[in-house]
Length: 205
Image (cartoon, rainbow, N blue to C red; front, side):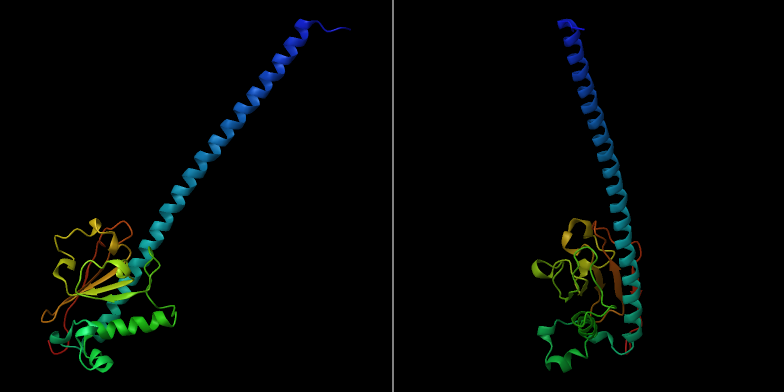
């Protein structure tokens, strides 16, 4: 039986229609997969952020407890100094609270100790002890920042969320003559922790 030109044209149109629908169906499937992938990534990202925040909460509490255990060994006059300002080198640094704490934490990091503190946002294990605030350059986003700068105090008007160089860091604020040390963290979005630990009762204070 011979096919008419009209019949052939109809069959060709039908085939093109099927191919067109197949392409549309494929595009719909790809779009649905993309939507679900985006949603899954958002959920995973949120869980990852929550996990990093949980690490910071655990670390700040642990650091506070460690500081409490050694506070009685130091008096108010020997709470803060930079390593450059201490005479007697390593021996002299042992008499300064912040430098003693820094040396202890640095030794853990050097040995890759599981108890060393790590910035969950930057991955840094660096412990910075400096008057300058906030830390910049190679000292930015450390695991722990120890400072006597008044702008670093938890209740300071300085907005931590305006400075990316503190994100993911534990912050210890103390000053010679003041019988109080503050310990808090700044999360990866730049927001200070909801709780600030305050340590009082240094020996000889």
